[in-house]
Length: 363
Image (cartoon, rainbow, N blue to C red; front, side, top):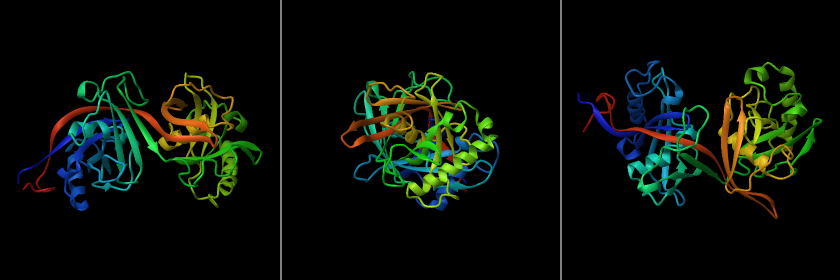
């Protein structure tokens, strides 16, 4: 039986990579679609030797794009996480790193036109219904990939891709400061309870007996620290209107310290019962909002530039994560229009990927 040829672009998005497809070139039925993606990636073998996967979950991700019928969005982004050594596909999550390649890929596919030196691509996540605006550099009528932006986990530099997440204040609780206070004492520790993309309780590292520069391994060994964190987190969960959070991973917990590597601030993120090896995307948006909003526990830790949108660089155990904010301090306090991240992307090849006819018989 002949193989089935499917057009695709192999793209690195952030710290992940995988094939990007036009959704109309793939089967509509989810079971059939899963078979095609398994065959394309080569899932079921630790090296993905029979497909384009790279033997690691960050290299077995798939983006499927289409023109959106949503009133705001230009592009629908449908994500799939394909397993490495099992023939499985998960359509439930989304991926913020692969999202970085969606705008460039959509332009390369001709799903929407380039509009100038920069092109704004409005994206709807099919998996989560999140709305994200991607700002892509497009000088001379083409997507630019070379540049001076760098992200932890990717060698070299590239053109920046700005991802602006819309309507993220009060993601779970409906309020920026769910307790009604920008900072308060809980169990003897001054903290800020804040909800932007992810509910968090944020304190100062020195107040909890650490420097804020420790490695993940050092922090995970500090059982006394986690006892302090959990005691505060449980009480904060009640005050934030989230009830008993004993068995819940939210709110997450963050600790801040002054920057020492050229960033805006150093931070450690807890998930909440162990330390994140770097920093979560949603956690970085929430932490950045805490840094920018007035009268939080971050007051006095940082100095912010007067440029708008405002870049924030968070130092974490593995390096940095860059967040960009469009905000103002108005009569109602901190007003956030959008919050996003600086990522990069690179097109590596485009053409046809072939899957066996047994996975999807050609017509």
